[in-house]
Image 1 (cartoon, rainbow, N blue to C red):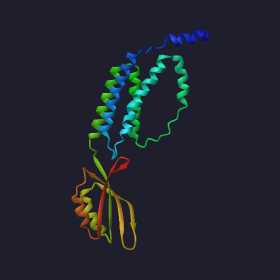
Image 2 (cartoon, rainbow, N blue to C red; image 1 turned 135 degrees about the vertical axis):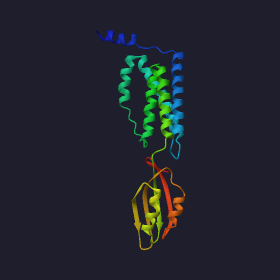
Image 3 (cartoon, rainbow, N blue to C red; image 1 turned 135 degrees about the horizontal axis):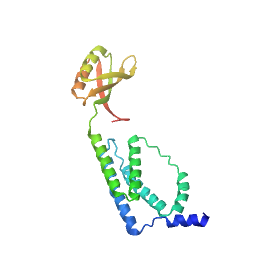
Length: 222
């Protein structure tokens, strides 16, 4: 097969996209992207909600659809695009693994939309959205807290007796002490949420001047 015959095969076996067909694909992609947007918004557990990142997920889905339509519209050009895309490097670090999952989800839905498999697109995006929302609402079996205790001459036996009825287990993470004061940072695990009554019990211990507790959530504290 000659070079001209190979190029002719590529051109004749390409897909032609009209304006109407392209708009239908992009509108379906936008609808799927909005489902991802709402899912990220509902399931977000961060102290600071990143609205720009959420909108970027919609953009990733649409851009993926455009790239795939361009590749399928001309197989000859797609070979050059593979080489061009292979030199692109994204160096933005994604700190939360959950954000990485959403990026891959947006890319996968973009591939589904561009292939015009709308049943697969909306079935998969709705199913995954429901799984994310349900999993975000299910409480964990254990709750972890950081307990910061400061004072002077703390009665440790009394402190331990007051703490143990409220926790499943605990361990000392950091201990600081000088000639006058001492500070302990404990990691405690409880069933359900900790009650404010615990603070009243602990502050009544001899030598304890202040008690602070901070909830741990995944890789963040807040």
